[in-house]
Image (cartoon, rainbow, N blue to C red):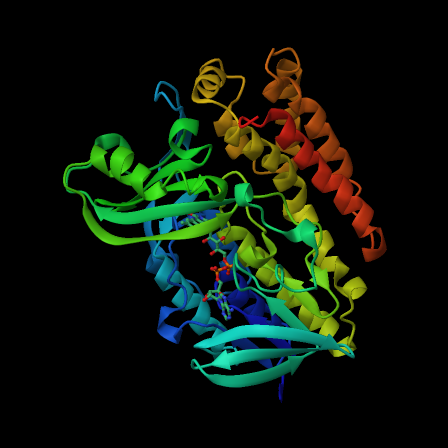
Length: 450
Ligand SMILES: Cc1cc2nc3c(=O)[nH]c(=O)nc-3n(C[C@H](O)[C@H](O)[C@H](O)COP(=O)(O)OP(=O)(O)OC[C@H]3O[C@@H](n4cnc5c(N)ncnc54)[C@H](O)[C@@H]3O)c2cc1C
C-alpha cells in the first residue's frame, strides 16, 4: 500500500488541473492515475471548442501555456439555426471562441503537471475505493493485470462521465445519477473539405431539430485550413431509434463535396443540472465525473479546468490539517454552486424545453423571437441569464402552449431553491429532493412523448 497526500483518478483536463494546482499550492505526494498510455492522454472525441477567456485563465494562474501551440482556429461568428433553416441567429464572437488541438492541449496539461513533481500511473484503471478512519484506500489494475493499492486522505475522481464512484458505489445516491435523457451520444468527424461553402468558414454553427436529433444538436466548427469538426448528438434515451451517425451521414456530410475523413468516433456528453453534492468524506467528484457541464450543449472543458483548479487549492489547504470530512469539503460544493450551479440550474430547464418541442413549435418560437436561443447561450453570467429569463417569462405566460406558459414558474422555483443551497451536509437530502423534483415535474408536464 503506497501512501500519498492526494490521489486523482483521471488525467484529463480536470485531473491535470487538480494535480497541478495542488502541487503548486504545496502538496508533495500526488498520484495521478489514468487508464490510457501516457502518450494517448488528452486524446478525446470532442468538439474542441473553448472560450479564449479560459486559456487566459490558465495563463493568469501561472500555467505555462502558449496559445499559439494549441489553437487551430479563431472563430469569428457563432450561428444558431432553426430546424427549417429559416432563422439564423448570428453572434459575433471574434476573440472569444477558439478551436483547439485537443490532444496537444491534453499533453501540455499533463507534461506541465508532471513537471511539478506529480507521479503518473498510466495504463492503470481504477477498480474500487474504501474509506476508513479518514483514509481513502483505492484499488487499481496496473498494466492490465497487476493489482495496485494506494491510499491517501483525499481521493479526487476526475475519471469522466462514467465515474464508478458517482454511480455504482454506495457513496452517492440516486440524486447524482445520470438519466438517459440527461446525456447525449455524439458522433463526430474531423474532415478536410476542399471547397467549403463560405458561411462554414471561421464559424461555429449549431442546429437544433426534434425530427432529426430529438432535441439534441448538430454542430459544425471550423478548425482552419479547410478542416471542420462536425458532429451530431442525440439523447441516450433515443439511441435505439435514432443514430447520430446516420444523421451525420444523411444530413450533414452530404452537404459537402467529397469530405476527406481525418478522424471519426463517438462519445457521451452529460447534459443535466448540477448534482446536489460533489463531496463525501475523503472523496470529491470534479469535471465530467461530477457532471459539472453546461447542460444546454455539454460544454465541459472550462468547468473541468476550473473545478480541477479549485479542488487542488482546497486540497492543499485542508490536507495538512487532516480536515477532509464531508463537512470540511463542503466549501468545494459552495464554490461550484456559486460559479456554475446557479446558472446551469436555469439552463437545464431550457435543455428540457429543447428536448420536448416539435420542429414546428421551435421554428415559430425562433422566428417570432420569443425563444432567443442565441442570447440564452451567451448569457454567461447568472444575473444576466436570470434577468433575460424573467423578461421572457413575461411573454411566455400568455402563450397558449404549456411548454412556454409553465416555464416562468419553474424558473422562479429553480431560482428560489438554488438560492437556498444548503450550508452543510445535514440539510442536503431534503434540499436535493426539492431541487430534483422541479426538473421531473417540468419534464413530465411538457413531455412530447405523452
Ligand atoms: C463528442 C463530444 C464533444 C464535446 N465538445 C466539447 C466542446 O466543443 N467544448 C467543450 O467545452 N466541451 C466539449 N465536450 C465535453 C468535454 O470534452 C468534457 O467536458 C471534458 O473533457 C471533461 O474533462 P474531464 O477531465 O472531466 O474528463 P475526461 O476528459 O473524460 O477525462 C477523464 C480521464 O479519466 C480517465 N479514466 C476514465 N476512467 C478511468 C478509470 N476507471 N481509471 C483510470 N482512469 C480513467 C480517462 O482515460 C481520461 O483521461 C465534448 C464531449 C464530447 C464527448
